[in-house]
Image: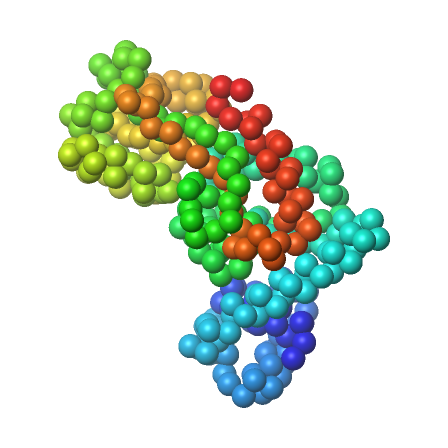
Length: 298
């Protein structure tokens, strides 16, 4: 068993195909197939079910994938620690990011400072929904991920705090208020986000004994903004999920705080801080210093 075989195995599993894994690694598809067959022969089990245009894990393959990622992660940590002893900051770092909050409003400034301080570290960014990022952390597909806090399943560090904002058309009577109650948002069509904020928004209404009129369930924040801007309904989103030039892009939309205010904390999570690579620890430290300067109102 070699590290190369394990890397090929994990890539085929993640990309669901031999050709995609070969392209990522810059090797031939036959080399990928040969490495996997050799690994399966050594293990004595089938790890991958081969289809004409795709590949999927066997049950045993799913069980062993996490172990393979753990081995590769420890190997990467050893390489990075050895390089650090020599004063060289090298290696790779996989980051999981979600939606506008992290990908547009937090990550760019953090990455700029990180790349300036650690130019030798190769970064890979994967973006998905909140639940996807959590799954990637659990499965070790990423080294670190942005999450909504608290989350007791992981080791976390807080970065910023924002608040949930009501979105209403500028022509709506509620647009003139300094703050909007949940009950007032139940008086017309409500656009429910299917993104990460849903886990915060739905309990707000339930705990208050309220039931909004929800004809729309939308997964993309940009679609929600367009719909509210057109006057199709009202909604609630996190402040950091809003574009920095909100009024220029959506002149007929108004964002108003909730009454009472509802706060949200965003941070970074790792599966086990004790197994962090030097690159992961460096990213956590840079993010801890940079992110507070990006908080709303700063």
